[in-house]
Length: 190
Image (cartoon, rainbow, N blue to C red; front, side, top):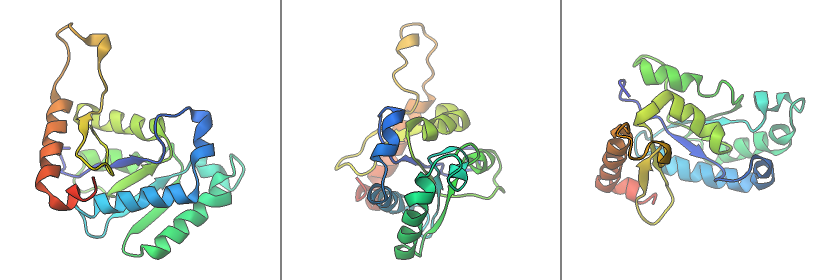
């Protein structure tokens, strides 16, 4: 972005149906994702601030709009943070406003910044990424034994051959792959 701030969002689950998300989420998975995210983010900031989006609207509102946060997510975040006191872990936040600070930091160098947000599922994390970063977002799969980056906008089959595609996200994906290649600490997260 204009501000030079890194905008990182990690997804707790992969491409699965929304109805499957609550069935796949558990404390062990959240801990594993936070461990991976921490390892990635400390490459850029030795003491990162990580935010976590709740699964339910308004992060469940103490069981009024879903029980996952109250039943296990809050405790999972507390127990992970107790073992990782060098990380500032915040949340779970209401998903409808969790990325507001990201939008501000994208445009304003003086805005309060965080190092990453853990989203519970695909669209929860990628819709705000794509709205805020538009053609500058890059999909990077961390945790693989090799480097993988790609434009975040997808394949673009609907505009193929029409001469209207833009290349910025591809350029950013190549730049990210080069950055990861040059940074030995990042290579260890793959």
